[in-house]
Image (tube, rainbow, N blue to C red; front, side, top):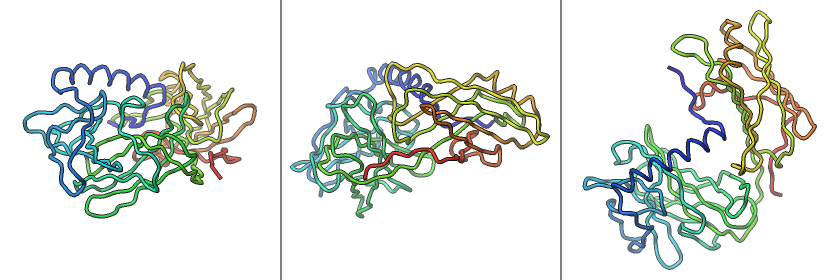
Length: 324
């Protein structure tokens, strides 16, 4: 059965809260509740067992635990981090958590790069920089250099300031997530691509269906006061259905420059009732009074890592966030 892999912002917040509660309960029974701890100098290999992570979310440990540590190189000592979310990598399953509150994570101050060690072989090491001490943080992709022998360096991105660096180590079927803080002292030029996806229809065990309508846009140049959208789904025979997804009021902002609009499964199933094998998606998105037109095709344009969503092409182009 095809299922959606990326959550909407609203869904992610609710699900994250649920994960925090559930994992906290589990960890209260199985973990030692410790903070991140110092480890020997970088030339030494830390033990893979019993290495605590930052407060308070941690992957539970046991006598046969072989979860790898990510070792952050501070100026005068190293700190070993245990992952806050993991699948595989010696864990024997999956566990979800959260990266920890601002001020509780190990912190680097300044420097050309933020360096760390991660010894297991991986397919990729990626990093996301999340602004700290902002009500509505900006999330930016940060470049990572592979320095060899399990050593890596993260480059600063965007305005100088305090950032949480979320590092993801991944290999086939496995991933592990770690976090630390870095106060950068230089501003780095960046232009982020606008990422936009739309999910309406889905293949449910060979049957045309819908899990609801989700329109998401990330990487916009500014935060918005007014957002509205109309989605039109058109079948091969020219028949169409119009849907008006809406935003949900949120007490706190999840990500600066982001938009999330949703409609019900019932709205999506009105589109599924058109029948057929190929559908055109048209989106009229109005941002603070200016309208942009987006186009996508399903299932031809379905994203392999975000099914059943498709990416959208916009006219005119959506305004992207940039730092000169």
